Length: 582
Image (cartoon, rainbow, N blue to C red; front, side, top):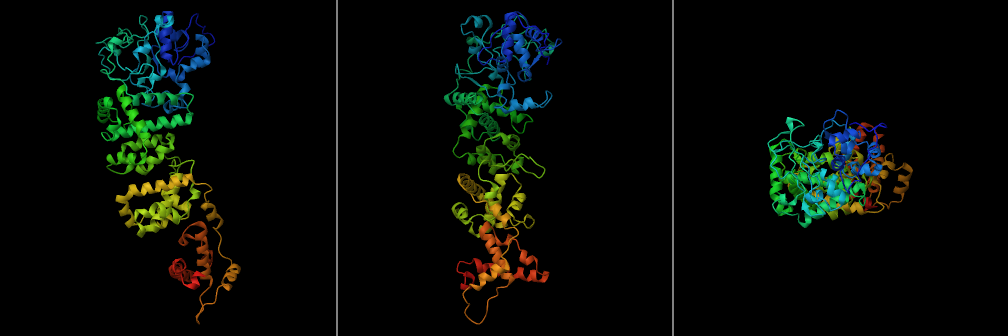
C-alpha cells in the first residue's frame, strides 16, 4: 500500500465522515464530490501507489491513519474510525489479521464474500450533503456478523437487483475503481452479461441500490425480535460499553457454536427462527458439498446469518448448555471425539472462548489446544479452584454427595482416584498421566486409571459421571479458604514418625490382655507413619513415602510388603480391635 508522504498536498476540499461509515464509503463519497474516480482519488491522497488499479480490503486494516488524516483534513481519530482497527481488541479475526502478513491465510469470519448493505441507509436522509453524495456505506457491513439494519429493522441486502452471476468472492474494497460516472449508491459490478475478467473498461451495472421499490427484503421476510436482539447484542459487544475480554469471548463462543449447529444439522433446527430455516439449510448444503469439513464458514445470505447467529446465541444462554453440547456432539460422533469435525473449530478457538463454553464442551470433546511440548493444554477451568486444592484420594464427603448416588460403590476406590485426576486435569490442562504425577499417584502402575468394571459402567454412565463431576467442580469454585493438599504433600514428602515419638506413643497404649504381646516394631511404625500421612494429605497409604521401609534389607522390605494389607485392614476397619483402635 502506498502511504501519503510529506509531499502529498492536502486536498482543497474534503468531507466529514458519516456515523459508522467505512473507508470505502468515504472514498466513494469524496471521489464523487471531487469528480474523480476512486482510484484517481486514492493515488492523489497516497492511499494507492501511482500504478495501482485496484483497492483491496486490507486498506481497512493497513491504512496510514495519520497521513490519510492530514491529506483529508480529518483528525486521526476520525480517520481511524473509518477502519476496522478500533475493533481489534473485540473481534478476534481482526486481531489475527493485523498480526498476520498480507499473504497469510484467509479467515472466513473477517470479511463477507459479497458486500452487504441497507438500501435505506444508502438513500439520502434529506441533508444537503447526502442529497448530493448519498448516505453511508457502514464499516460494520463488512463483517460476517452483520445481517440486520437496526435503524430500519430490515435484513441487509447482499446482491444487486440485477441477476449477476458471481462465481467467487469480491475481495476489493471498491470495484470498478476507474469509473468516474457512478454515484456512491450505484452498483459497481460489471453489467449483466459482462465479466470482471474482461478488464477495467467493462461497463458497470449502475443500478441504484438505494431505491426501495427494487427490493422485497427477502420476499417480504423481516427480522423477528430474537434476530433483532441478537444483532443489537453483537453491536453492543463492539461498542465501548462492553469490556474487550467479554467481547472476544462472546464472538468466539458464537463462532464455535455456529459450527456445531452446522455440523449436527438438522439437530437444533428448532433454535433457528422459522423464516430463516430454508436459508440455513441451503447454506449447510453448500458446506457439505465442499471441502470445509470443519464447517467454520459463515453464510453468504444475511438471512442464514441471522438464523445461525440467533440460534448460537440462544444455545449459549441455555440453562443446560453442557448437556446440549454433548447431545449435538453425540449426534455426529462416529469415532474418537478428536475426529469430530466440530472439535477442529473448538480446538482453534477455545482459548478465546468463555469459561462457560469451555467447561460445557470439555466433557464432550476432551480436546484442548496444545501450548507446550509435554502436551499441556488450555485448562477447562480458570480463575476458580486450583490443582493444589485437590487431594489425591477424593474427599469422602465429596464422593458421598456427588458420586456415590451413581451407585458404583463397588468401584469407589477407582472412582475417587479417577475423579481426583480429572479435576486436576480440568484446572491445569495437564495430560492425565501428568495430573496423576502431580497428585503423587504412580502412572506407571496405572493406579489412577479406571478399572475394567468401571470402564464398562462408564460406557453407559459417562454423561451421569460427567454431570456429577461438573457439579462437584462448581462446588469447589464457590469454596472459600480451600485446603492446599499439594503443600501438605510437599511438607510431608520426607517425613516419617521419629523413633522417639513412636516410643512415646506406644508407652501410652493400654496393656493388651493375655500373654501375647503385640508387635510394635519399625514395621508397624512405618504403617503408622503412612496412616498419619494419608490422614493429613487426604491420600492413600499405598502412595505414602516409606523412608523407614527403604532403609531395610531387600528381604525385610519384601516381608513388610506382604504383611502391609493385613495391617491396613486392621487400622481402617470401622470395628477396629481395641489394640488397633488405640
